[in-house]
Length: 367
Ligand code: G6P
Image (cartoon, rainbow, N blue to C red; front, top):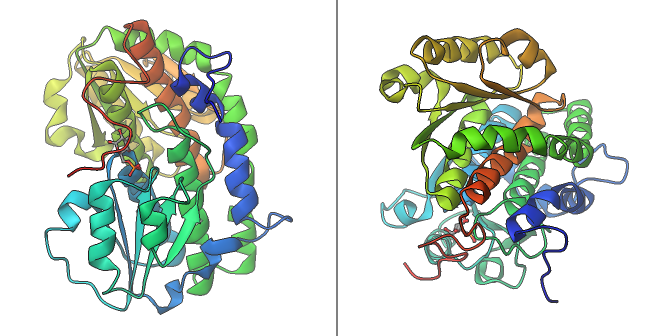
């Protein structure tokens, strides 16, 4: 099949706008028809026989693992270790038959992730792979391959694969919660119901593209950009910063909001925008005080939040990007879209080669 950009200028834009469609493929695969329970390979992993999950990947896939850590710990009460594959494979991590290891890779060919899988598989209870390419090396060598069903991803910077990795990992975390007795059927149905709202929520979020493009014009002028988030939005801050760096070449750093005062606040000045990713959840007020610390130093804020968050904290932010209201469980998936669009529009406005950024490869098959 010849990949076509269709109405879009770049594959990356096409792939961002495909997310309402391809998320539904993953949801259809991992959720039952009634949308009350997880099914498929996600339910087949013996998390009830595990003391730990070890999640290993590179790049954007690693940030998907980072979000999943919050889910597995909270929903399944399962301790989780995450690492980048290039570190994991060489630091001789102690592994055991009470570990389930999960390797996440869009291409399924990343050399470090494949080597980490080969290293871990003989030692653990099960080595599962979360992959977009079902015939890839990582899918073939794992004990269990879980497809993410995002379809071919051409843009070097990963977008739709990230959100479908998250959906797959979310389904796994719910299934783990059930197997471990941490969630009852009612809680499972509520979480599955929240996930099944994603295609509609994503389509709605994409309608904010013009506002996000306007905010991106501001970002495109900056030399440095800070991204802040708390809880499961912290890895989203890391991913937002990575996306911007990859395609616009603007220096960006993602930080846990609470770490702001331990270093990055020194960078804050009127020329350094701070992107705050914060739905109005239990930790929102803490993030607002972090925003105020930034504003008190002349920093400009781009706040990505929901209606309640905009109401409570929009005042003082230079730009507010308003996401549709969603269950806090799915916010890290939904909020990936404005982060992707912000990076995309900043890079496109700067005239960068969005789909083929300098020095980067889609799949890194050498060490
Ligand atoms: C490269 C790509 C990234 C990707 C990473 C991991 O660096 O540019 O977008 O996240 O590899 O790739 P994988 O195929 O293993 O997910």
